[in-house]
Each structure stands twice: as C-alpha cells, then as structure tokens.
Length: 302
Image (tube, rainbow, N blue to C red):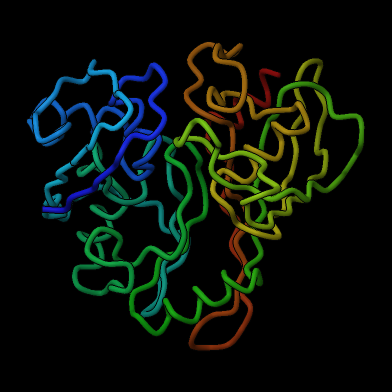
C-alpha cells in the first residue's frame, strides 16, 4: 500500500477529486474517484466523498493499493508478418489493434498474438506486459512495427531508436490543402498542460521533435502527405500536423470532433516504411507495408 500526503495551503473552491487529479498526475480522475469511493482517501483522518470541497489547513492522506497486473495469455490471432528471422519480426499492424496490454485492453492485443506465435522467443527487456516490443504505434495507426525475439537484438535496436537512426516514413491524409510542397516542423512535444491524455507542443518541458513532410496528392478539402520522422515522440505526427492547422483526417483528439467521412474510425495514419541495421548481420534492411484497404479506398473516394 502506497500513501501520499498533502496539506492544503490555499483552498479556493475546489472538489477534492479535482485537486488530487492535479497533484497525482499518474492517476486518472476516475481512478481517484474510485479510491475515494472505496474509502482510501482521508481528510483530517476521516474518509470523505468525491464532492468534498477542500479547505485551508486540511490534511489529506491518499492510500493507493498496489495494482495487480493480470496474466497476459497467448491468443491465436492472425498476424500479417512482413519479415521474420531468429532475431526479429516485422508486423503489419491492423487498425484497431492495441500494441501491448493496458487497462481496458488485456486481450486481443498484438502482444497476445505474439505470445502465441513466438512462444518463449521474445525479448524480456520491457517486462511481462510488453515482451518483444521495442516501439509502439497508436491503436488506430496501421503499418510496420518492429518486434525483437531476444534481449541482445532488443538492446541494439533500442539504441538505434534512441540515436534516431531508424528510418521511419508514414503516410497520412490531413484536413485542408497544404500550400507548400514540403516542409519541416521542429517543435518540442510534451504532455498537455491540462489534459493528461493528450500531447502538445511544449517549449518549456517538451522533448525535441522533428517531422519532415511532403505532399503526395492534393484534393479539394484534404491533402495526402508523406511524413518522415527524425525523432519519435508520442503522437508526434498528429501533434505536429495539427500545429500547422492541418490535423489528420479522423483524428478526434487533435482535430475536429466530428469526422467528415462516415464510418472512418480514428486517424488516417500508416507506418509505411521501416529501415534499420539488422542486429546480427549488420546490414541495412528496409520494409514497406502496403496501405490498408480502407486507406486505398479513401484515396479513391477523395
């Protein structure tokens, strides 16, 4: 059981769940509300309700039980494997598949499928929740994903990622018509100051992030672009293109809440090309994941 303590110096007119959500950045507000409901939050040694409003001088104790991670089980899920040898796999991830287990997604993930396909041949550096996973892409992003079968391969390729020497090219469709044929967004990315589920351009606390883009085709209201990552920050392309006022089509987080294309689920983003130095042979290898059917059909429709 972990405990956190706070003393209120300037109360204002704030509910305790909102106050704790700001102080405990690793916990969601719904998690904090559950802790309160379960009797794990005390003010002046007394349990309280979520609508309690803090007062100056209040002494708050939050008890956080240790989370038990569920067992991650192998599942017989078909994989589109672009390449495989004794060290690595390159998987063409479909839309809607979560890469590794997380709250709300402990089944049907890429890791569940990898455990069935690879058995015990996956690197263990990232623990039992993310065996073999060197990098990740969002649930609704499709395309090339690198998986390592042993720790040595993982260490070598993780260093290439850290050194930004892995070649990664994404294809995307963005709102609006880009005027320039190509350009670069060089702006640091960090956690959004008020919405912890989002990232944002953050010059104070963000990490360096560079995206190069090139127009592939223009439509009346949209643009088909190629994005080359110089760095690999969370939601990098989505944040950078939105900063140009050209958010990704289908991206309800960084773009319009209502998608203009009926039936489209999530951002239109595909990890097309992945290139790196093989951890054993030392030779450069490059893989090109074909565009998924929904993306091809959308281009024809536009």
